[in-house]
Image (tube, rainbow, N blue to C red; front, side, top):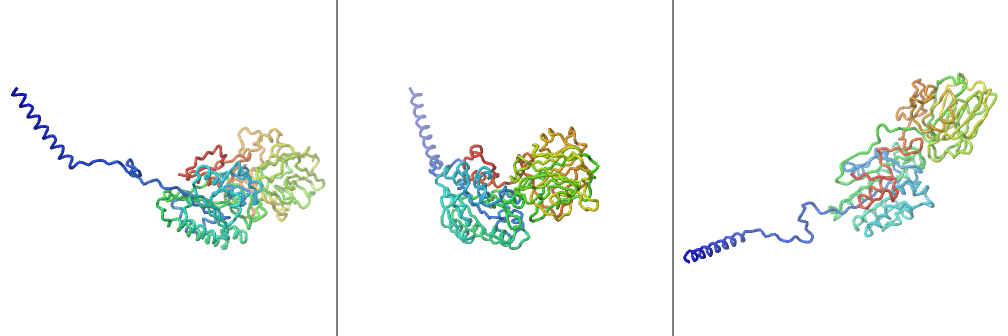
Length: 553
């Protein structure tokens, strides 16, 4: 009994001490509290910023011109941008197709805007960015402020707010006011003065009035960027700034397929981006447009094989054009002022072509019949087979389209006192005239090619080891030289075509079978999916049939 009573007393004392200890510790304990509804206790990062987009479109501003221009505000975006001054659009290089390709992400063969009246537009199947924003983010505020009203009238119909400015200054003022006084999520701005300067004075980095227009537009862009960075909630916002154009130019016009007309620029700026310039692959094939306008390009040989030494010749080349003029030779060794002059010529006829041959006494002409016209901006392969003891036959894209008996012809060489022996986009007088086309991969054989070979071999840019005619090639000029002022003769014979003036090379964007060549180059159609991705849209490349890609890091 005594031991039990003693135990009970000890237990009471220990319990009291334990309670006292607990009370002392509790006084200094940290008691966790429930988090506020708006507090994330699982991370210390900043709240996610609201993503927005500012697009500054400068109509008719060539990429190479902007690169050289006094444009400190736009150039100031480069340290935090993915950008290219070598970006490209496609023909027709006109405002309607250009802005449509930018905002739909597809080329004109899909959206069907082929000119500036928008009468054939297919925005139902290929909607603009504004339509996708409206569907996926219905509460978004999209604003389009344009100096050229057709953008708002046709292309930006799904933008929440559309404003037409009387001139570029009015567009700038309205854009600054929107950024200061309202809350746009995507703001598209269109300036027009650079394009007007190009039309009036020339789209040329060496033309001071054109470059001054770029400088003035850059000052407007600077005011807009200042208004953007001065927004009261700017630190809570995450802006993608896009600066681009719809087309370049050549001379005082645009619309064609030359590189300077297709040369655009694209800048994607965000303060978190590292600077990255997108340059074309160094080994990409470059071709040269032969032209009667602007540069007046033609190519000539002052020495070549004596064609009278061969009973048969085959001449083949690829050509691409958006419109031909006159009856200008593609290639010839004759004075074309008369078809009776001795020699041969493959020449333009309307928007098609023909071949002529004569020995000075007898003349034979063959028109290309029942084949498509050439003026579709696609590559076509033209082949002329000359059998002096039989027929001359012509083929377009491997299809026989004309033939005539030429047996009995005597000499077809040019006169001995003529300086030029073979010429492209001219005749041997060098004063006949020129047209506009891109010509490449010219081959001349000292034999007749079989029809099966002609039909099967239209796209090749190489000579294979098992080619049955590889030892019969007299001259081969790929025109892929990419620099300098000659077309090198790939046979090694040294018959290099000289170019009439300093050349302007451009990347080959489609092979001779008209299949796109993948190039490391920003294209006009990449702008829409890049913006859509930034804005958090669910971009369905297959269902939307997009031609472009995103350049987001």
